[in-house]
Length: 337
Image (cartoon, rainbow, N blue to C red; front, side, top):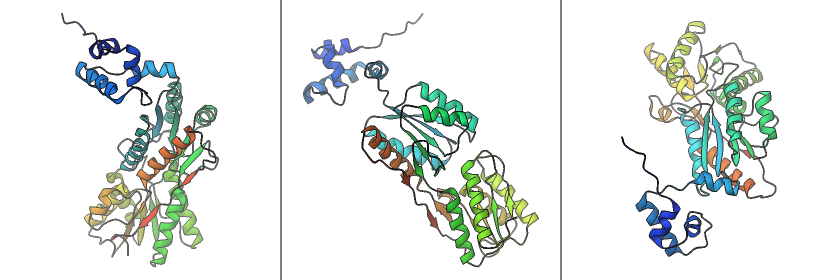
């Protein structure tokens, strides 16, 4: 019967290198005052022995966990992956790590995750969106750590935010289409309920259409988020059946817009000659499909980087730290005139 091997300890490294266990412990801290030669020798011995530093025990002594809790609605969404990547890049300079929670666009699940994550005593917490359950909001308000809401401009920020108006970016898309002489414009997605940012984009569409004095009835729900390419195609089919004279359609995401594009191609409709299509998110697929997709770049990775910089400023005790407004960019490509 095989036995579990005892892992190497700091005492083992101390014996190999001829220093005290305290010196070994100090070598694993970035603020160590020991010489470079001694530190290098200790780290080499640790690597040779297969030693893994026990950060948990060290953190218990210092009362610091060196991780930031983050909640995102989708783990397979390229935009949120880029945001987490940008945040991780910035925090890694301080040897801080991310503990990730996946909400699946469910506010009740977000509430559960927030409670669980806060129990682990993170240095800060970053959440996606500015709308939460009443209990989740209370948990965040009472948390003795920095709270940053992202991908939104909350009506009542809990702490700080790094984001933009989801309604505003779609108003800009509508304005672009109207300037291009479209009037019969539709919107796909943004089901009211789970995806609050998608709902805000839908609301932005309605506000802009009313402002231009145009019909707002061309609304097609695409199902619960995250909306897939297949659901975008199915929604486009329903749109064309209900409103065959539609001139242009704005989709809640580039994935649903790509699905809508393929449905038009199946039906022999030319894009943009017969109908124009716009998306959101500036996904890679939108820049390589035929025709390429008009979209809105929300600067997802920049949201992560700026969130990280803001967090570090707060943790460093800097004064007059403000919120960060992101300025999404309308990218006009071949799918609109």
